[in-house]
Structures are given as C-alpha cells and as structure tokens.
Amino acid sequence: MSIIVVGAGEIGYHVAKRLSQEKKDVIVIDADPEKVERVRETLDVEGIVASGSSPGALENARIKEADMLIAVTDSDEVNMVSCLVAHAQSKTTTKIARIRNLEYLYDPDILKKSNLSIDLIINPGYEAVSSLINLLQVPGATDIVDFNDGAVKLIGCTVHNALFHKGIQLTELHEKSGIHDLVVVSICRNGKVIIPRGSDKILYRDAIYAVTGQNRIGDMMRFFGQESRDIKRAMIVGGGSVGLLLARALEKMKIACRLVEQDETRCAQLAEQLDKTVVLHHPDDIEVLISEEHLAGIDLFAAVTEDEEDNIIWSLLAKQKGVGKAVALINNMTYTQLISRIGVDFVVNPNLAAINRILHFIRRGKVLSVASFYETNTEAIEAVALETSDIVNTPLKNLRLPEHAIIGAIVRNGALIVPKGDSVILPNDHVIIFALASQIPKIEKLLTVKVDYW
Image 1: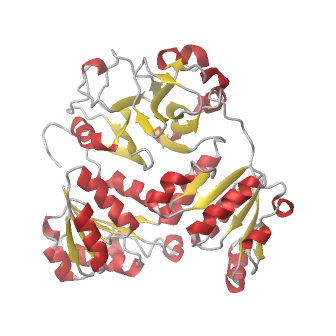
Image 2: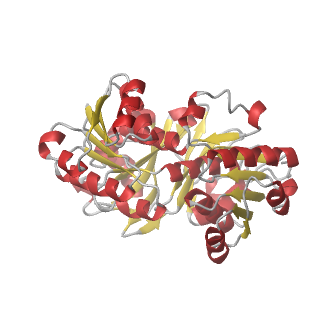
Image 3: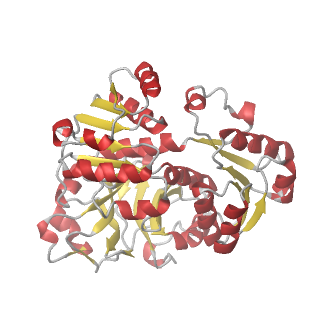
C-alpha cells in the first residue's frame, strides 16, 4: 500500500512511524526542512520538502500511484487544498483531511464529499472529547473501546482488588469473578506488556485490558476493585475548541459545569454558545483558582488550555486538593506515555484520537474499528471474518496466530462468545483481536481474502 502523508507534525510523524513499521510505502511532505529531516533520519520513509498543496509536490510523491493521501498539517486550508489537488490528479486515491475549525464541523454541507472530494474529515478535538465522554460512563476505566455497536466493550483499568495480591490465573477468572463473558487480553506490569495465556497470573496493581459484554461492565469493574463515583459537578479551565466541545458534551449529560477562561472576549463568545455552563473570566494566575475552597464538591476537573505543561501541573494540583477525576489536554505523544503514572486520571490527546481514526481507514480486510494504545504500543481491531480469509472454519488452537496477539471475543448474531481452543470462527462473525502493533501486518494477512480483489 502506498500512502502520502502531508504534514510532519505530531500526527503526521506518528502516522508515518506506525505505517513504516508495518512495511508500508510512505512518502511524507512538509514545508519545514527540519521536520522532513527528522522523518528521513528516524523513519524508513521518503521525505519531500514542499507545500502539501503544491501540484508539483504531489506529482513528485507519485500521487497517481498512491492508495491514500493523509493531509494533517496545522492549516485546515492547506489540508483541504491538498485533497482538492490530489483529487484532480488522481480520482482513485482515498483522501483524509484534518480540520480543526469547529465552524466546518457544525456546517457539514461545506465539507460534503461532492464539494471537496474528501473521504474522511477528522476533527482531533471532537474525537478526543468523544473518547473522554465515553470514559466517564465507566468510573475507574482508563480506556474504553466500543465494539459491535457498543454491545461489547474493551476496557482498560488498574487492578485494586486485594484478592489479586497473590495473583489469579486467567484460567480461574470465570470462577472467581462469576462473569463468564470476560476475557483479559493484555497485562502491563513494570512497563512490560504481556499478551496473556491461560497460565499467566493477574497481580494487584497490574494495568489490564479486558473484553466483556455491556451488561457485565459494572460487575467486572467491581471485581477488579474499581469504586464508582458519579460525576455531578465539573470545572473546565481553558475555553478553546476542546473546552467548548467538552462543556457542550457535559451539558448533554446534565452535569453542572463551570468553564474558566482568561481572555475576556473569548468568555463573551463562550457565554453565547453555551446554554447552562457558567462561564467565568479569571484573568489572574489560575493557581489562585485551584484551591480547596473553589474545588469543593468538584467531581471532574479538566485543564484543556493550549499550554500542556500548565495543564499537567493544574490537574495534579486539583487532584491533590481532592477532586474526583483530573483531566489534562496533552498533544505531545511522549507526555501521554508518562502522564498516567504521575497521578492524572485521564489524558485528552487530540493527536492520538486522530491517529486512531486514520488507522481505521488504512487497515485491510473488512475492519470495522481500530483503537491504538500508544503507551503500550498495542492495537485492538474489530473485523468481519470474510468467507475466504484464513481465519474462518478452523479451530483457534490450529490458527497460526502471531505470538503477541490474542482473539479477545467472537460476536455471532449479536451474542458474545468467549474464545477457547476448539472455538471456530464462522464467516460474517465479528472478531475482536488485541495485539502488539508489530504484529498488525500478520493480523491483516489473516483477515484479508485469499484472492486479492482490492
């Protein structure tokens, strides 16, 4: 597969990195010579110094041979024009554009495919806020991914049940928990990721990912020692696009919310766009606002300003003052890896959210959804088992599944099936696979039809 990435910022770099690891043919275009040099030196990709909206640059990148163009520069206009020019040069290339301006999001007719020839519009802030709101539905969860239209969930959490001090084998989980449809697909211990087998043990304070049905989530979280705390009051610091989107989402959830912004003009704009959120102008140091008096009764504190270092510090301070959950907006992928270890409950990372959407489009086979977990370098994939793929009509124990991959669930006619050695995947089953990112090409091969008709 040949892919052109326009923009070598955080999103473009990490998309190119992931795709190059999977041996895809990647060309990166950016007007900044330093960014292109970084790509050339650290990744196995080709780099071109030019504007991504330049017809000549796209021609040099062999746009007519490209399967996909991903335009993710910091400029909405450059991304849109790149897609338009690409469409003029190659009608068969799939085009993805990152669009951050919320005006486009609220007027979808402007971005209709018939107008701009863009196959997928990604608003990173919207994707990130949607992920956070999904997390808030399950107290104690660190990650949630919906499969089979939400009937099956993949949930990340930390084990705090004292029963696990001596360890519990995976083969004992169903008996100990009383939950039949529960499959643990990953264990992270001391920074090492384990794709477990039946003899592996789960220990106290392990970070795990588990698959279960929607109706058993509460039971599962209690079994792993996660306490429930309803969110009734929230405070948001930062009135940018993410702050606005988060406030609107919390309003829909009927959560009382205060939004704090230092710019007076922006406060007036926010007050006009929000119905029930209390917008506060606070020109002084935000640290003055983060006191026990102001945070009393706050269940959710979200620092979503444009300064990610401030967001980390303020979230940590709020957590120390007793808020229920602390959220920080982080764009730097390195920070995302570290933040959960120092006390912040949730990270809102628009870049990572955008990468997840992009990966969905890139995957081969009939892939329904993809989730990337950057910190553990793993992915979860939901795919339809195609009739002529290698994964069907064979007992799982006989499948040549990669060592660092596990089938977490089989969904057949809406029913969740816990995979066992003698289980057989049938055509049109939904299959949920969890694996290290390095194993994705092998997974794709299993999922793809034997006769290449793409």
